Image (cartoon, rainbow, N blue to C red; front, side, top):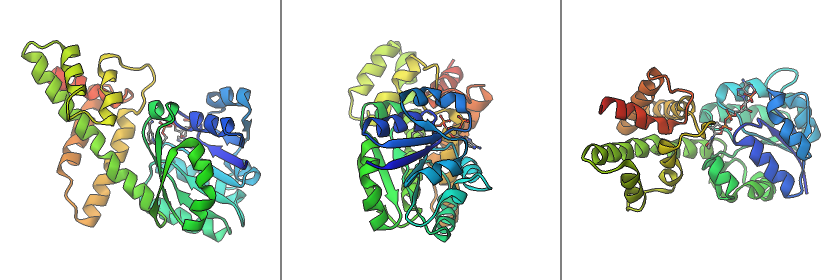
Amino acid sequence: MAKVGFIGLGTMGGPMAQRLLDAGHEVTGYNRTRARAEWLAHLGVELADSPRAVAEASEVTLAMLRDTQALHDVAEGPDGVLAGLGPGKVFADMSTVSPEASRALSARVAETGARMLDAPVSGSQVTLLAGRLSIMVGGERDVFERVKPILEAIGPTVNYVGENGLAVTMKVATNLSLPVQVLAFCESILLAEKSGIARDTAIEVLLNSVVASPALQYRIPLIVDPPEEPLFDVHMMQKDLKLALEMGESLGVPLPTTALSNQWLTAARGFGVGDRDFAALYEVLAGLAG
Ligand SMILES: NC(=O)c1ccc[n+]([C@@H]2O[C@H](COP(=O)([O-])OP(=O)(O)OC[C@H]3O[C@@H](n4cnc5c(N)ncnc54)[C@H](OP(=O)(O)O)[C@@H]3O)[C@@H](O)[C@H]2O)c1
């Protein structure tokens, strides 16, 4: 069992840290808003006062943060992760952030004598709690092999993708599909509904049809029964699409459905549902369909 650090104990990070505890690891954690992580202290996570203190106390430090800015904020400065890393330590960032920023940070981590992995996840809190999360990893292979058993306690599926930055690249490429699928599904529901088919019936038939993906299976029920706490809000979904669009532009890969979905997420913010789960796209389309 290892000394594992965990920075960013939010919707995903909190239950991930809990799984590490359940697997028998010694976990030191940090969350910017400490009150949000108190429940983990009751379970046995040692809450530290800074990202630096977490990195100092841990052999392997994981992070699950909102975006690239948050990663920058916890990494830099006298109390940042970089200040607490050193030879033999590993920092694995599991957030969905800019691949370019992730690669640049891995070079800074190497300067401390430590090594970095990008280890983003595919799934949601529902998938995580059900023990079906999928993790993709970028970085040096031997570092990956060393950290793999720790990630498997969160996972259980852990795939090596390639060098630093490639896993988070794969994650961005994967995620652009989410709102595209949700939008198409909403169009199907609305067409059925306005033709006189009950919404619940339309949803049930669609979820039993060939077009239902695992991602739709857990998100579409949120249309009928919106969660109090979003699994993944409109702002965060749009963050991922913006990363994809930037990559598409610089690589010369047109992403027409991503661009269109991005516009619909902007419309959702205009509708005042930016803080809701992005299943609220249904309400935007339904509003336009009268
Ligand atoms: N939710 C999902 O279904 C899902 C699925 C796959 C991947 N992801 C990815 O996982 C990451 C985390 O998502 P989440 O749903 O767990 O988000 P979340 O609940 O909003 O948690 C975000 C975490 O980042 C911290 N944070 C934000 N800005 C910060 C800053 N400037 N400095 C320090 N800490 C900061 C938050 O601290 P506070 O508590 O203080 O705000 C919190 O611990 C994101 O990159 C997301 O794209 C999410």
